[in-house]
Image (tube, rainbow, N blue to C red; front, side, top):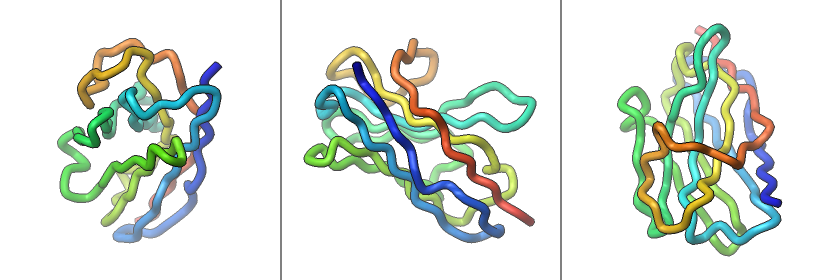
Length: 125
């Protein structure tokens, strides 16, 4: 069974940076797309960024140029570097792993079977 554990969330000010980490266990995920979603209070969970097995990333428009997703297959870990944070980035951030190998980095609309527990990111104005 795949387990995903996020870390790195916190309370920061507008313009600050945070780096989220997601460590996977139970299966080697080097050939699976991994990504990040977020859910703000009162809103639906939304896709933020994904990275496929070859390292190709994909971002939702609102974070392009500010967020960078990367992965370290040797550590079975995916990262989300978040720069120039804004109050609207405030949300619980969830790590996600695909269940089908060799798919692209666009995780939107895809059934996700593996989720982390979430980590809170709060950005004050």
